[in-house]
Image 1: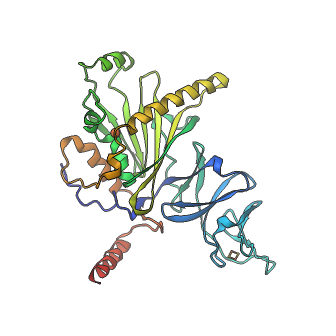
Image 2: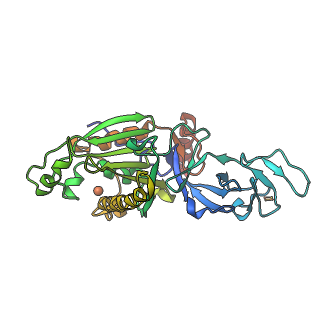
Image 3: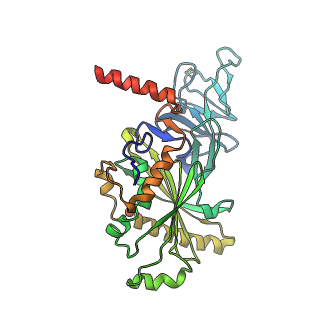
Length: 352
Ligand code: FES
Ligand SMILES: [Fe+2]
């Protein structure tokens, strides 16, 4: 096994991967509302403007620094509470009431989209990849509902590896089959691990479900940005899709939202059928949480001794290390220069 003892980005509470992160459930942002959101350490004011679109602004007004979530939506823009300066969807100042005109100042806005009943924010200048989606449902209209909202006492990267920690399925979840993953790189931002085994011939449970699987037991996890993962599993005639959407809070902890996904089915019967499918999906999703909860409250992740059974975990860490990293809080890209100045700063602090 190759060494993974000193990753730079993986499990680093100061860093995360540029990508899409969930910001606020859509239903909590009604027409004309503006809400404060701390996302990956950056303060945002997210507004739903008159046309129904959600826009994410940097939070602090370029006049005197008031938090813009104290302000209000005004048609096609927002107005700061303090002196009523107005900003449009691009963040340009379009009105300074005390002057009776605009000023050439700007507040930064971030790419924003809505999917799965959630407002998502892209943490970079230009969107280069899509919002996480189960690979089988790409370009398909979907139906979804929310599962659990949860907190974990460790970094999102560490929570994410649970889904591909092959041997813990046997030791923690009593699974009767050895799982062996095959890796598939979907893009620079997405990597998929799929089970390749059948086995489990001694298990009554496996004998029971075997007729529903033509090939190996379907179980795969596709990761985006090191912090979002979609699990696909279930018999050939009905796959379940669960999106685990995590974000990094202060001190390297995890705030997560489980989202249950299925394809949209037509008509009232399709809608009703989907309610049952999504309910079942939630039961399946809860299985993943069962038995693991406590270990994520106390773990001090330190991957000193990788074994053959940890291969997928090592591959995932490598994948995270290869992506574009940003600093938590500032969202500045980690470059060789910023890396060097950070190391100098840390060395000078250590000398004090
Ligand atoms: S602080 Fe925002 S308008 Fe003055
Ligand atoms: Fe688990």
